[in-house]
Amino acid sequence: MTTLPAQRLKMGSTTYFLASMPVRELVMVVKPASEALADWDEMSIEDRFQRDINIRRLHEEVVPYLATHPDRFFGSVIVLIDGGEVEFETFAQLNANLPRAYMGSVEKFGFLTINGADLIALDGQHRLVALREIILGHFDGIAQPGIANDDVSVVFITNEDIKKTRRIFNKVNRYARSTSRADNLILSEDDGYAIISRQLFNDPSG
Picture 1 (cartoon, one colour):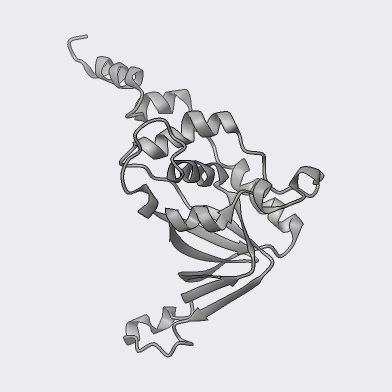
Picture 2 (cartoon, helix red, strand yellow; picture 1 turned 30 degrees about the horizontal axis):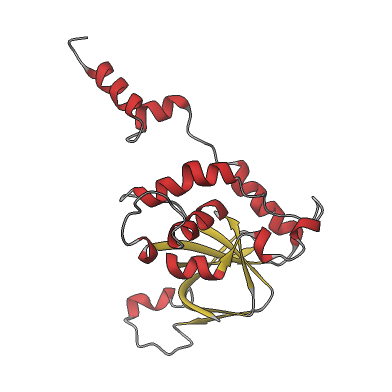
């Protein structure tokens, strides 16, 4: 059973819960679809709602970034609640003694309890698995301290219908665009060539 302070929010027809989890807990209770679903390998294309993990990208890009950067950061992991029981208890139900200014929002804030469900990474599975690899010590370099205690933003949605779940995954990933080569040249603080190029471009002496 997992209980978290959360917000209950709604976008379109989808009710979702916004919470946070420390990395050490996240990697224990949330799984990629290929691990959470016993029949994943036998599923047809029509039944799947997640991609296979890109092992090369995982070990060459995601793990090194999260393990070595003190300013590591990424957006919310979207987690599918599959089966089980979901209960959201608002502060209003708890009869919390809150100031009047807060009363208009108490129905959105409370505690989310998930019991007996599979928690599946719908978006963010590479980040999830990378963090697990780091926590388990499967990284050759020296990892930054405190990663296990990092707070990760998590969006929980319930698996109402497989078609709806597939549609959400498709839209979330279809409109996520990688930065261009020009963007990387302008913005990167890790690529030595990009840094030198910017310095040369800005040097008034030519």
